[in-house]
Image (cartoon, rainbow, N blue to C red; front, side):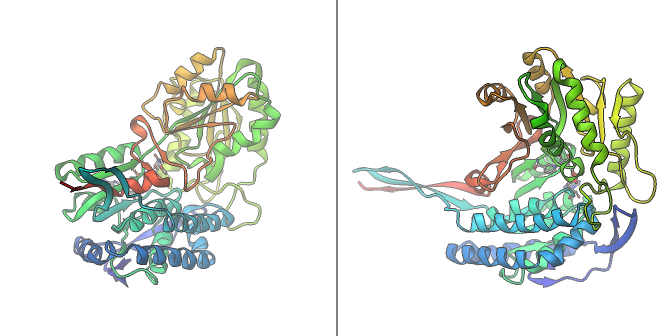
Length: 463
Ligand code: NAD
C-alpha cells in the first residue's frame, strides 16, 4: 500500500487468486483501521497545498501519465494474473489510464462570468471538495481508477483509493508508480476487503465518495454517505439492450454485436447484455453470433492468440453458470456453449442463448459474463418498452442501415448512453453515467470533473 507517499507494511494479508488457474498466485496487504486513518489524515494534510497550485497539479498529472505508460510492461502482467484478461488488453488498459490522466491534465476548470455590469461582477467558480474516497470493481481496475484519479486530482482534491479485493495488486502497483511523481498524501492506495470500503464511506474526513460497482453495494454507499451528506458519484451495473431493426444487415453487424457483448469476457458494466432482434433476422443473427462464440479462442490471458480469458472470480463464475442453467431449464436453447469448461480456472464456454424471453433471469438480471440471450420481437415499440422495463439504465444501442431512424429509436431508450450501430464506444471527452438504478452523476469530460467540485459564487458589488 502507499500511505503518505511511502510503502506501508501490514501485518495481515489475503490471497489473490489467478482466475486462469483458480489458485492463489500472490497475497495483498490487509489495511487496518489505523492505517486507513493515517491515509485519510495524510490526504487531508496534502489537500492544503495541493489545492492551491493549479499549474503544479497539471504538470504533475502530465508526468504521472508518462511514468504510468512507461511502466505498462511492469503492470500489465500483474493485471492479467489477477483479472484474467489477455495481456494485450491489460497493456491497453494501462495506456488507457495514462490517456485519462493526459486528458484531464489539460482540461480547463471553468470559471464563468455570469454578470458584469454597473452593479456587480459575478463569477461562478468550482472549488475542490477535499478528501475523496474512491472505490473500484474488478473488471477494469486501472482504467476505472483513472476515471476518478485524473479529474479529482486536477480539480484540487486528494484521494484514498481502494481496489476490489479480487484485483488489488495492479492498482497498488499503479499507486506506487504514480507516487514517484505526486506529492506525498495526494494519492493514497490501500487494499482490503469489503469492510475496508465500508470504513471509507463512513470516514469523517471524506467529503466525496466516488464509487464504481454493483447496484446492491451502491445503495449501501449512498446510505453510508447520507448522515454526513458526503457527495457521491455512483457508477453501477447495467443490463444493456441492443435493438436490431429490420433493415440491418446481419453480415455487417454481427461481429460488432459479439464484441459489444463479449469484450472482457462479458464483464463490462455497459456490455450488451440482451439482444432484441426482429423475427425475420433472428436465425441469421443467432447463427452468426454462435459461430463467433464457437471459434473465439478462450484461455489463459498470457497465451498468444487468446481473446477471452476466464471469469474473474469463483462467485461470479458460479453466478453465470446458475443463470445459464436456469435459462436452459426453462426451455432456452444454447446455440453455442452453455456450461463451464472443465479443468482449472474459471473458464466458461462463450454462450449464445435463444428461445427465451423477458421474465427469464438472464434476460432480466445483469449476468456480467460470457453468456448472451437473443430475444425475438415483432414490433419495435414493444422492443423499446421491454428494453426500458428494468431498474437498470446504463446504456443501450440500436442497429440499422438507416442511422437517422436508429437514432430516433435510440432516443427513446431510458439510459445514460444510447449508441447507434456501435456499443461500448467511450472516450475521456464523453460523459458516462447511468439512469435509474445504474448510477448517480457521471464520469468523464467536463461533467466528470464537475462531480469533484462544488460551485461557488463570487459576487463583487460595484455599488
Ligand atoms: P461490488 O459492488 O461487489 O464491489 C465494488 C467495490 O465495492 C469493491 O472494491 C468492494 O470491495 C467494495 N465494497 C463492497 N462492499 C462495500 C461496502 N459496503 N461499502 C463500500 N465499499 C464496498 O462490485 P464488483 O462485483 O466488484 O463489480 C461488478 C459490478 O460493477 C457490476 O455490477 C458492474 O456492472 C459494475 N460496474 C459498473 C461500472 C460503471 O461505470 N457503471 C463499471 C464497471 C463495473
